[in-house]
Amino acid sequence: MANPKPHWQQPSHPDIQEVIFNEEDSTYKSLSRVAVAPFGVYANLIIPPCTIEERPTYATCQIGRDQHISLNSDLLYMNHSCEPSLIIDVDNLQILAGPKGLRPGDELTFFYPSTEWEMAQPFDCSCGTPSCHGQISGAKDMTSSQLEGYWLSGHIRELKKDQKEQDEKDSQSSTSNTTTLSPPSPPPEHPDRPILRASISLDAKDPTVQALQEALDHAEKVVDAARTALVSYMDVSRSVAEEDDGKGDRVKHRGTFGQGGGSLRRAADAK
Image (cartoon, rainbow, N blue to C red; front, side):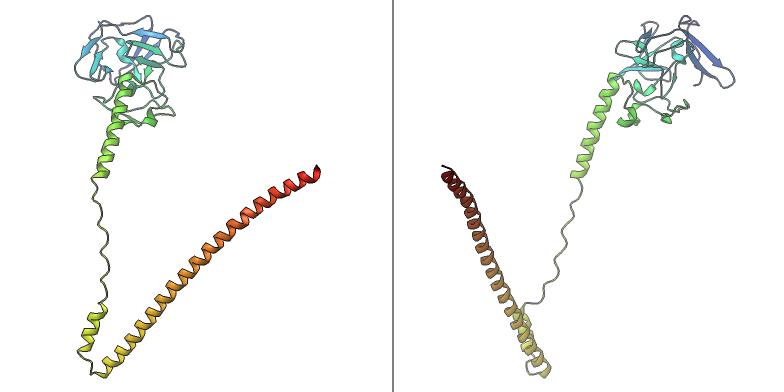
């Protein structure tokens, strides 16, 4: 991280923290001077020196939906890591050791999106851990699966919930506003038979027309016969099916009664 200029007396926490500056590339890192048990308190964020800020900056820490604080101490020199050693408990204004605890010499890092919803200055993470997320711009731009397993501040959880609900509303609104496709137009109907006959009758003296008229009459008779046969076949099939169902029911009842009767006879014989 770039080295912010301090306006406080240094070192601010010499008993628990060592800050190392790299003048060549203007970066820094902090090391722990103490051992802390898992989830034990490493430091308290006291006001003052911490101050409430109206807007987020590169040097602030978000402690609520619209609340931010400036640390105004060497605690500012805690870098980001996707596998952090610290937890910022903004509800209690405390810095806690992570689940592995702290040992002297461990680098002091925390997961910035655990407190920051939308960062003033996004950056490309260089923590080099197996779970590195690349660009870090705040929890707003991360998925729920990416945030899974991290300690998240209460305001971050609330904002992610609101974001999910808004996304669902937008999705439903988009679906309801989708234009419903009109059903395809039905194919053009064939000329009605009376109209066709009227047209043909105008040229009734033409031999070709007469021949075609006879063929049409024959085709119509064939269609009518086929329609009648189909209706008759369906009626017969339906009757047969109903009769078979009735027989099946009768056979089923006979079988049931027969078993019962047989049992009674065996009982009587036994007596």
